[in-house]
Amino acid sequence: MSRIVVVLNGPNLNLLGKREPEIYGRETLADVEAECRRLGAELKLAIEFHQSNREYEIIDWIHGARERAAAIVINPAAFTHTSVAILDALNAFGGPIIEVQISNVHKREAFRHLSFVSAVASGVIVGCGTEGYALALRRIATLIGEDKG
Ligand code: DQA
Image (cartoon, rainbow, N blue to C red; front, side, top):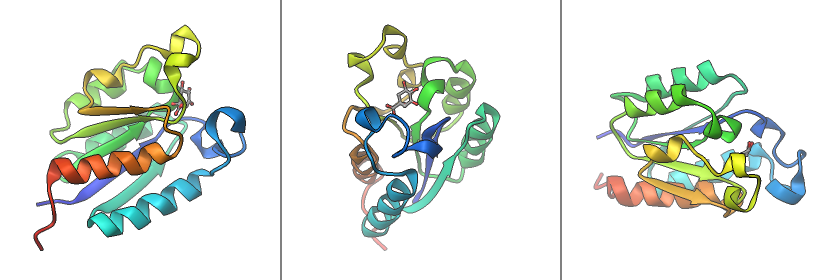
């Protein structure tokens, strides 16, 4: 069984650590990727890590995960609140999906309270900072089970 986990990051997350650090913290996306790879190795998950500022690229990565990857972790960033297209793509993926929001979007502007992705997610991790990605991977390891090797 596949143990590939596709970790997807939406627009502006390439600026993580530099943009609004009081909201998103000082860790960069490269730090987040390194931690996902470290924990992935521990949990025997094969991590594929991507970021894009383009909606179609995120949709293409979701399509590429179909019938190949075990699970998806996704922080769609601003597309969370706007993208029916990402929701539709995720609906065509069979495995577990964990949504990550670095900040507590519910404490912020009302337009951030709606997530199209939550409607399809197996779980949602909100406001745990960049640690949310590690929590998501641990949840996926629970959902897909141990590697019996
Ligand atoms: C975010 C929250 C979104 O509202 C925002 O547009 C982002 C980051 C988060 O992880 O906290 O870019 O997805």
